[in-house]
Length: 239
Image 1 (cartoon, rainbow, N blue to C red):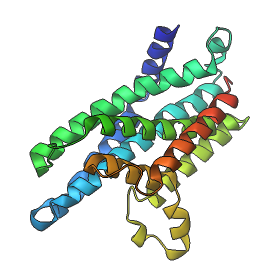
Image 2 (tube, rainbow, N blue to C red; image 1 turned 90 degrees about the vertical axis):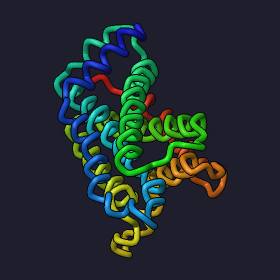
Image 3 (cartoon, rainbow, N blue to C red; image 1 turned 135 degrees about the vertical axis):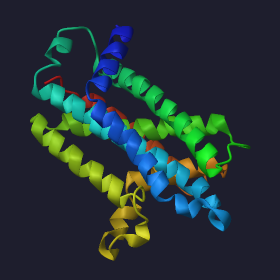
């Protein structure tokens, strides 16, 4: 049953190749647009921005792929077949994470190679165990948020609308696409408290090697992950 669900999620992933192209193309586009900041005295800027690029890919994969695909499948009654099987919501959610986590890890490796060869990013002296652990936690947080929004509304179209709104809010206000200082002052309080900001801060701590418990990003990300993990299972809908 688990292998069958892994195959199902893989098919869902490749069914919309445009989502993957957008998700993986956007960080590369951002990287090359900002490449002028990675030379000379500003070479350390890439080290600070690298977690931001990975977060963009995670956001796209969790929202425009997994969550929107699920809402779309609800709308066309495609998931009705699964409802007649012993598949539990927890199995669906966990296998969805496993497949897409493999994709984001592959992307992160490829992105690292490009950043290293083209812009001189150093991969030395990294705590890869901590980096992978934090990457998994951040990915799970956004995956559960997306799946909650994909299921919480009875009408799948409403879920799709909210997913698009939240995705762009997280992307534009969460320090993933533009610095918080560039955001209108009236929105900065909201911006500074989006999950995206905490995710980037936590990934930066793991990437650079500072303590994960400095500040409260780890506690916030872990708390959001647990809360939305429970909610996404509770409100899970097949149609």
